[in-house]
Length: 310
Length: 242
Image 1 (cartoon, rainbow over the protein chains, first blue to last red):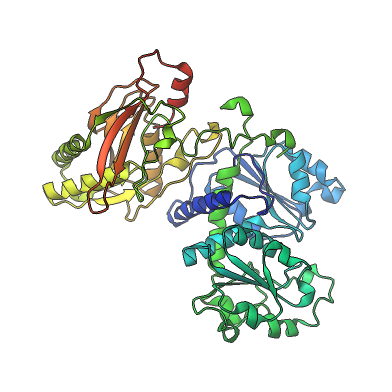
Image 2: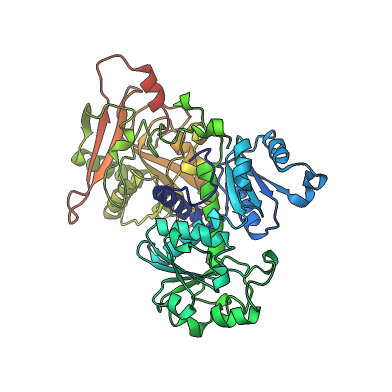
């Protein structure tokens, strides 16, 4: 995968996903050492190009790069020339002239990472673009489920919340379906996009039905800041219908795990109790995120070789 | 990545993890020889067994004797296997040490891939293998267990990796086969057999369980033995990591 872009799960093959997850499992061991660093990417430059504020994903990539001994440069929007009205592509080209080995891009508009990848020599990893995809989140979710359950094939995964506006949901639907899981989605009708069944999932409008017999429950964040309002009557109503607590979780399998991409709106998507304790695995997701991103940097960072080189 | 570069070599590049000039053609868990990993570099039909199971086990017993003889503090021993080939060898060596001197060395497995010096020069990244170092290496006498040593670069990487786990009192190397062609000043302390080879050849250690109830069956083969003059291109390709 060296030199290849990772723009979404949609275009990944199953064996590529499995290679990434397998590599990430090996990377986890490094996080348990006293010296949490290996010299693999020494002298390589990883650039975080974040046009949208993000603490978790950006920090996770930064730690992942540093554990592989790469130099990590954070190019954040507030300090960039975008405030001087430089165009997106000029920013990208300027960056490319500084010879990064991999560029991590987040933008609030879907498709921007693709557009940047078109002009950059370095490979681009999408760290979330609009409501399109968030591939690294989906991969770390798959890693977490795999480690909890020992498999993904044959599991049933319920994704609950604002499916229509969620890049996490979309990437996870692609990923879990490719690995042979059954994916269900549920949320208020305004949050379920039309034709969602085309992605190979079943849509439900009640929590009780969607949870019936599932192995994994994934709650999505209600993104107040991203929506113009009018999608649901009130947070309180959402929380009483689709918010998870231990009582509602009884509809799922007894050994079901609860996931959330964070940050959690406590008392909305998850009860306080569930946000903090098993069966929720939210902090494992965060921990796995670092290993997963290390795996990606290891597999991808570096420019593609000219074809005559082998 | 810009379009002109999308002709990346993922499909044209050599097989994942091809450890060309060497060893490691087996998987420790499944015991299935991954012999195809060397197929691109050498002619497998020209394969010759140079060490059979009996000879390998004798060599391992002799090396256990040497280890007992040359180490006064057997309690400090820590066998660190370099996967894949080092794992079954370390297991066997540990059993020998126990029967000889009732010493139970600590055991670990350490993948050296992330410490390799040729990662940047390759078209694909090798698959990672298991690293498991359950106890601290501080103040221990580490013996790195490898199947085939050639250039010495894997041992160099293993020493670097080891230092990230602590400060051993000393580090020694055991190799079942030393095939020469050293590129670094690395000395092997316990050698099973010296097998002089041409650079174009490949020496492969295999461990296969032919029946689950039985012990593993070891063998070392030389591949690509050829009367014709060494193919320079081939030599270059397989002269890499051991």
